[in-house]
Image (cartoon, rainbow, N blue to C red; front, side, top):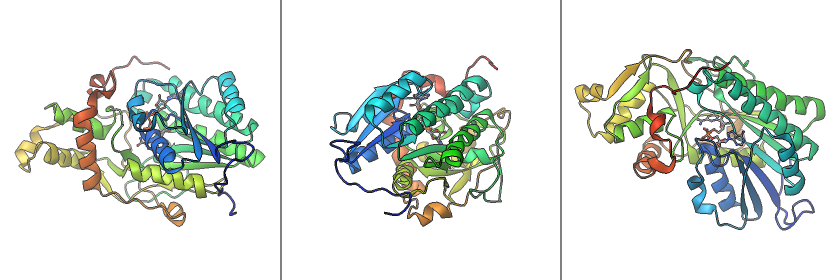
Length: 357
Ligand SMILES: NC(=O)c1ccc[n+]([C@@H]2O[C@H](COP(=O)([O-])OP(=O)(O)OC[C@H]3O[C@@H](n4cnc5c(N)ncnc54)[C@H](O)[C@@H]3O)[C@@H](O)[C@H]2O)c1
């Protein structure tokens, strides 16, 4: 078997009854719920264990389609509780970890630096340490393109330096360092991914695409931070789920993989596209009417262009076109906006939060 890949032989001693036991953290959130659904459906011989605290942005509705399957189990719990995490590894006999759980709202991170550090850095430290002690065969840490800091043209590859410019990105970069330490010191088989912006169903509407869609569906204006010139690369959720399954199967220990796309647009352009599709207009004056420019974030990177050649060499490429993906996403929010009890609050231009350290 190639280094870093693993087979599907049924019933190993470690995972009786199942070929593998896969722990996904944060599986009731946006991206990981798509990954959990894909894993459960595509690998009936794997037991998929979803560990999630059920924070404000989570919804078990994201998992309804697989919740009764024999190869799926949900456990509510916190990655920041060492004794609980140790017991979970002891009892569940985990083979593979896909670690998504995190505080993810960049705008909130400026106000809640300590909380972001606690969950994203300390939580990852607890999890990777317990996974090492339990001798799991692969630990995948889900990081972000934001660790690179901003660029408008020069593409980042996996060897580019980390230069985070907001507290969320800084916490993700710091957590990466802990994960890498376990590879450097113990050759514990960790893999790190850095992903572009993801869009699609299941995303809490605090993030830009579901926020603009939901505002327009409620006849409210898109709130654009600053001049809206910052550019983002957008990947559809099912393509990203496929990328994580590829990394799980073929990602090499100790490696970092950019999961990106060349498809990008500015936030102003994004608002115009959504207005065109939801308000059914191409009139310039009418389009302008639905755009509201608000103050900018304290820092707002210009863009994160990335080279994803390493992922391509594993056989992954995005397949879903923007036109197809955004139409499905718009339809989903029309029906599902109220899946979260606090969704309405998420539509404010900025989080309503008290400053903490
Ligand atoms: N959304 C994106 O565009 C994007 C891009 C690149 C990387 N990422 C990374 O992907 C991962 C998932 O992002 P997302 O946007 O799907 O997140 P999300 O905010 O939708 O979901 C995060 C999930 O983690 C859970 N969680 C939070 N703290 C926890 C804790 N202490 N213990 C257990 N569970 C906890 C939440 O309940 C939630 O279900 C994150 O690590 C994020 O940094 C996201």
